[in-house]
Amino acid sequence: MAAVCAQESGGSFRPVAYFSKVMPLPVQGMPACLRALAASAMAVELSQSVTIGHNTILHTSHQVTHLLKNITTQHMTSQRLSGYEVILLGTANLQIKYAINTQGPAAILHALLHLSDPTNAFILDPHDCVESIHYSTSPRLDLTDTPLSHATNVFVDGSCSRPSDDTYKAAYSVVQLPNIVLETKSIPVNSAQAAELIALTRACHLFANRPVNIFSDSRYAFGVVHDFGKIWQQRGYVTADGKSIAHPALIHNLLQAIQLPSEIAIIHCRAHTNRTDEISLGNALADQVAKTTASSATPTVIPMFLHTPPSCPDSQILQYLQTFATQTDLHFWEQQNLTLDQFGLYSIQGKVGIPENSLPLLISQAHGIGHRSSKLTLAEMQKHFIAKNLETALFYLC
Image (cartoon, rainbow, N blue to C red):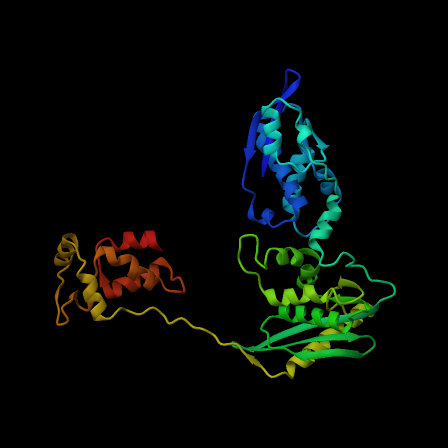
């Protein structure tokens, strides 16, 4: 974010400070208007060291006050939103004014430095922030989470069980009441979330060019559709910090399939309610069909890659490491009564002398992929090796 702090002097505004700060990674992945909301709060917070409680006017091209009071979004945690409310609505002597411009702080700062009216650099671009957020986060503009009165109600569910460590049984179902199974199949996936995404995708395909209400008890699938799927698509299916998301191909297929029905509503419903209303009965039917199909499916075997436990290096490697021993190491080994054995190694009672500069390598191996405690790692090292400052090196490396 970037902001300019200016003060009226001699009939015109003079720049007082220029603020620039990198936004947190979660904020960088938000829609533009929510990033502007965060930037406004950060600008006010940074400027307090300059304004020192005096009257301050925040000029922004985004309706930050309207967003704070009216928006309901899953892109920002309630804790973060509350923090912005405290800064923007709770700061004394702060006034927020809406400015219809798209120019950044650099253009405004340039105008202020030349003692000209900064509004002359403004490019008018009025917009509704709530509509902009909806447009940037929804895969289709008419998508809703409220049932359509004239559409068909269908219920989807995915199931995935794990009979053994490397075996999975998964399936999905698309059903209608009273007992109509539109489609159910076993699928080679190892995640219930993947099964839910496939179920939702298949329902969209089955109702291509027709209006449909799709009920799902998966908050994850609902969130992909309504909250963050479109943003992931715009970023190339990576998170805000550049890491790949889970199930990118399935999410891509779902976002494409949502375009197929003529009208569509995707609604989240509660699971396992044991109630007798239509939505509860439909969800229970979808759950039962998916589990039945999964239980009779051919198990999918997922190969497991196991790391071998750390082992003691062989004598050739140890002999090579001892060639890097310093005079300090040799003197320490002599004090510990180490002598050359039949393999040409400095050792005593099976314990081999290790140069101090080789300790990081062997400590890392003894620490292992299971991240042994420092106490167990020290015991493992002392069982096989003798080295100067072993405990000190282990303290810094484990």
